Image 1 (cartoon, helix red, strand yellow):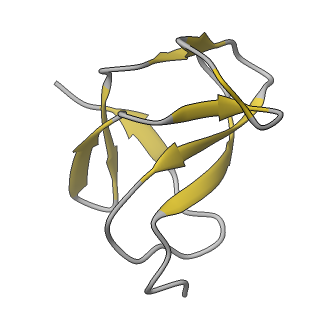
Image 2 (spheres, rainbow, N blue to C red; image 1 turned 180 degrees about the vertical axis):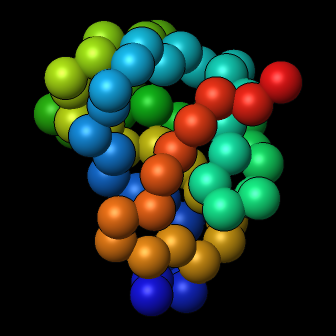
Length: 68
């Protein structure tokens, strides 16, 4: 478990955009930071590895999904 991080790396299986609402293990959050290869981007495509914000603990292998 990584309890004190403020961002995470994610291997995308779908597209993601700034402002998207996402969920990991019942924790909902809005994407306010999105980086691809250390550059800030507006969106990222499936197959990319990105860095995004979060403010809760995660465990390697947790599943990130879109939320409504």
